[in-house]
Image (cartoon, rainbow, N blue to C red; front, side, top):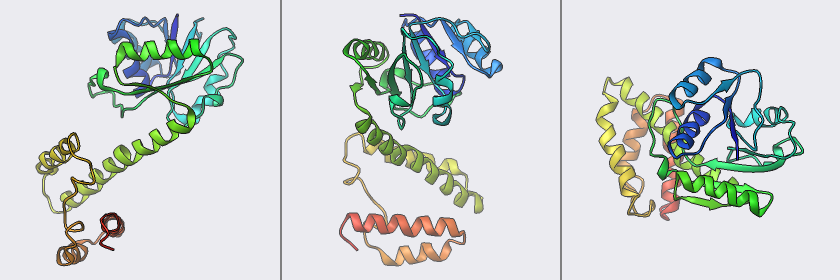
Amino acid sequence: METVIIGSGNVAYHLAKAFTQNGIAIKQIFGRNEEALKTISEENNIPYSTQNLADADFYLICVSDSAVEEISKIIDKKDCLVAHTSGSLPKEILVGEYRKASFYPLQTFSKPKDLDYSQIPFFTEAENDADQKFLKSIALRISENVMVTDYEKRKYVHLTAVFSCNFVNHLFARAKEVSDSQNIPFGFFIPLIDETVRKIHYLDPKDAQTGPAVRNDGRVLQLHEKLITNEEHLKLYKALNESIMKMYGLK
């Protein structure tokens, strides 16, 4: 099936690379940001356009959630398959008489960061068995971690991803604010962060918990609260410690 990727951001950039590296031909990369499209085009030898959407059998929409519905309207072909890459939107958000689907890669994407695409889980959904088989075959060319899901399941996949990725990264950013306030290089904490993540490869996260809250160490908790002068930091510190203590029956 001739394939067109619509978008020029992080997801489009990495999926274009993942497809190309695994022998999945892309007819065109289409979008509005010509500079970004040119980068994708040159790195993967894919034609690009900001004006004329190529005729294709499969269109993969890789844009922000807020833009998916509007972008889907530019596809006026009926006999084709159109999928978005959102974890939080139903396939029915797509507007058109074509066949609708979702093709959700569970990963955080940044252009400068190389990824092992074979380790990325993909969650696919389509309206019929033939399209589902096609999407699964494409995903399996890239990764062995492929799961067919409906929207109800995918919503929970995305929610779990927000907890385990977005919230965790936000805590890294807040932690860096604390270390920066005392001129302590944040790099000193990277080995600790790495080991924390490594542990959950073989331990249940609940069993891997350490720290003053799970020890019910009131002295340390009070000491930390006195040190915190940033209101947002204090709210986070108290809320997370309370959550930890409740999980382990300490409160």
